[in-house]
Image: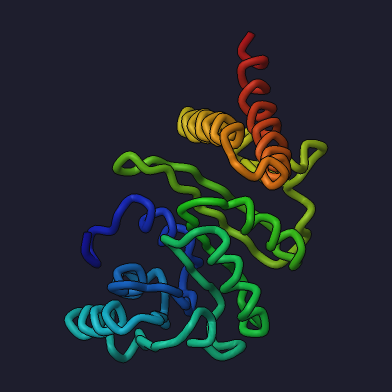
Length: 242
């Protein structure tokens, strides 16, 4: 992967950046995404944020090599502390777990003033992000699920608006699996959730062997609840085909 040829998942993120936007790419690693977006004229300017020295230096070298120092600022900092309120209008965060992305958004809430769009690509637990968006007044406007190199990714796009709008009567299932993804029910979607269901079945079996059965019972209830939601999503698709 390089700034001229992004991975499939980062291409999906880049395609959701509004034309002419000023973006902040948090956890930018080698700054591939902001370099690609600015070089292609998708974004007007960018901030590439990194908390670790190694990726920070790699990002600086990449921006310099591309001759984009005047348009891309590489900054060291934790999450959204690398930007000022009102400085950018689109924030991208890719390649992290859903809980970490949620934490970054929550801790930097005041920096989201003036931000019009969030493009978020969690590696797991996208439901944490959906719940955060719902509570904080961000409307989920687009979802995509894809498989690349044997891994399944989701890309969530949100704008400030009616956070309840995407959700219907099956809200808990939709928050877990994605309202738009659940409606589409692609083969990749079904593959992901069948895999998740199988993993939860294994967890349930392992809980039977736990030494602390009181703690295991609490965990079991949580696992059973999630498994029921997954089965509702999967079986709904199977019922529609019969």
